[in-house]
Image 1 (spheres, rainbow, N blue to C red):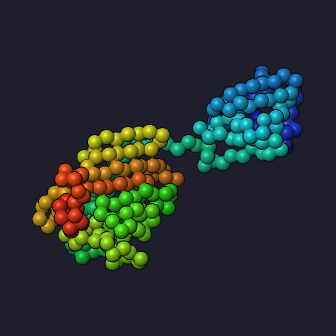
Image 2 (image 1 turned 120 degrees about the vertical axis):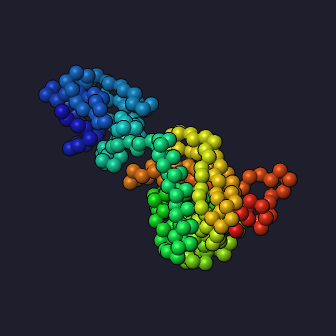
Image 3 (image 1 turned 180 degrees about the vertical axis):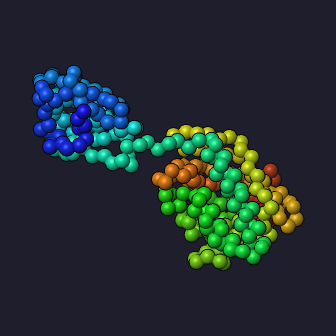
Length: 272
């Protein structure tokens, strides 16, 4: 069968003869069959909410900017005098994130926190370990990342990988790090023994995953437990791997009405 997406002489002059079949929708691309289009007879089809009008031996120039077809959820736009183009990368729809994948990323994130703390305690390369974990877990370099750490007062939002590393390993050990960062992944030097996620809800919508809840961090030095509230967003990156594109953490609301001082309460436990 013929495909209208290859070897097309001109979108405004393409015509069918009796030896060439007519257009029908079949699978991820449009193919030609011998039944629908006759010379001079219009064929109107609605694909993905857009109308493509084919007249007389196919004239596709009548509707400038009209969308024709859906290639696995992607619309190919054909304009007068233009050409139809597509790529193999856009031909396949991105697989939606699953709940199992969200839980897997959470498990790996918690393991990375405890792992970096242990490597730091043992005198190993905790910075390299944190850098690898960040690349595996966060979507920096693949998409924009919305990261608002628990304790980041002067620089509350961290849109770059460098700023995230400053937060996790400490501003003094990375280039252009922030002085306010004590190194969350190593608990300011005291280390974390464990991190346990407690999801309030995981929602899958529009192909991404959103999780909200609390996680408990156990101090490796004194065994105290700090609880922090979170919202995470997970997306599938261009390499097929699910990573974090949204991370917002905050300490629980202080019932006394005022925010807890930076050097007291839970905030002090989390960052030392």
